[in-house]
Length: 319
Ligand code: TXA
Ligand code: MG
Image 1 (cartoon, protein in one colour):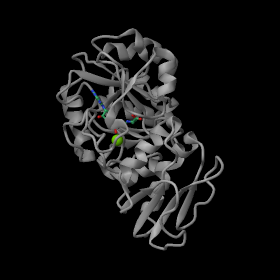
Image 2 (tube, protein in one colour):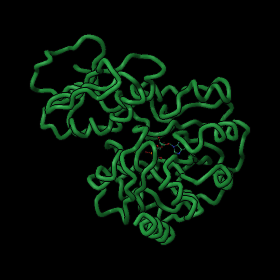
Image 3 (cartoon, helix red, strand yellow):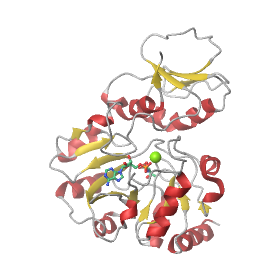
């Protein structure tokens, strides 16, 4: 069964079609990154602005090198330590990748995802697969195959079901194309983990300050947005816990998702566990029928950077 769908997935990619696939972060919507028409179909299916560049997925470092014009020593060190895994490297691009995948740029974002099914697909396809998250543009990223069906339905030729995503939020995007390595989007691999391998890295202001413009498009303030108006708060609860207008997403006191009733979720107090559940809880809250959601931000500490980034982009401060 799995072999059958893998074979079909490879055929679809070769024919210029769209395949949604699981990764350890979120589900991706993939097309052959050497085929302009195929890549254009991704933008159509998502309703994504054609100026927003895509991440190119490959099976291993050796394959990644084919699509980068230069391979600095930092890339080798990081690939050795973190690939397959939730780290995307932005590097000078080789001409094999079509311009549609990297609109207006001389760089390409490359990553090796950590999921057995998708690694098998990439090995078998033996080429680069351009893939953004498999959601409609500006919506919450999918972490199950069912989410992908809800988001994209028939516009995808095939959805590979690899179960729920382990990490649950998108990869860290690290730009190695300039003079100082810079994190453009915090994610599954932390700044500290990266610095242990290559020394000090910068954090692009837009990656923490939600009012800044975009060096990495898709990093604008309201992104990953639920349909229900979503507000955030820090510290003391600004309204009564019984206020029926809100779906509450609160920070819990242990590392499990404690309660998940009709009007609230109490989230794990560990960043990895929190990230793992975040998008499915946001989806659940979005269908609760409540007028708004009210989300408690975790503390402003380095280990919460990626989660706070996503929450800040999904919410506004409570007026
Ligand atoms: O975890 C992930 O990264 C998921 C899975 C499917 O791999 N993919 C994902 O793709 O989140 P997407 O398209 O939703 O986000 C890609 C991010 C965007 O913020 C985009 O601007 C940035 O990567 N990006 C892509 N190419 C870039 C480039 N050449 N230079 C700077 N930023 C780039
Ligand atoms: Mg996305």
